[in-house]
Length: 256
Image (cartoon, rainbow, N blue to C red; front, side):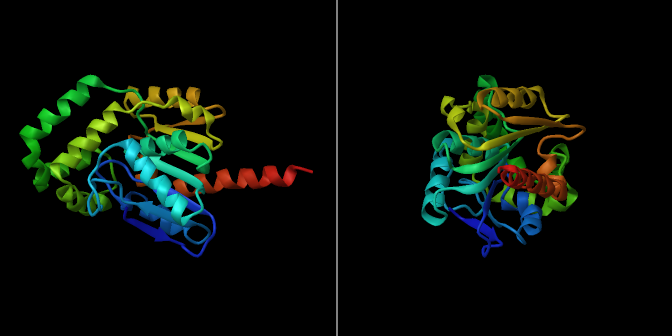
């Protein structure tokens, strides 16, 4: 697995997992802010531009990341965060290893499978794959994603690098994922976020995640679309993380 590292001299590690069709640059701005105090690791998920292996499943990605944490970082980190597909992989990591992190920040995750959407992905891409590398079409799609304009060149470049089979595979996995019962055993303090302008499945998924994880906190971010928090507001995202850690420090100090 390929990854980017920031602030590697620091002890506490934050692992952030990008959204489907994006890459490590999803969290580059956050990493540059946080690297002063934390070691930030940004993996390139399987099947994405410049990754070293094809996409197989969310479960496999989670297992690979856990193996990396075991080998390189002592098997546990301060926080795991993720957006959309990355958030699903983060949830799967929590389900596979109860003490994999102290905190988790889950943004815009869907855990309600859609059989119809899943069945249509293959035929849809089979008939329209050529449009993926069409710059004009990419700009229209990019506008629909509500991402900061500064991301377009990286988005277009990396979209063109993704193999058709990988694109279909991770989109099908994204629309088929459901929460594992074992996630209820996680020791992490989990926060789930969704934009107020997201579709109903994402908003309902946030409630499902909250109900499936004891003590999970949930927040709806007004006026934000899918993934906008981490993509378009890195300063706010970094501040949110720091606030979580500060609360724990204060709680420890309050113990006699």
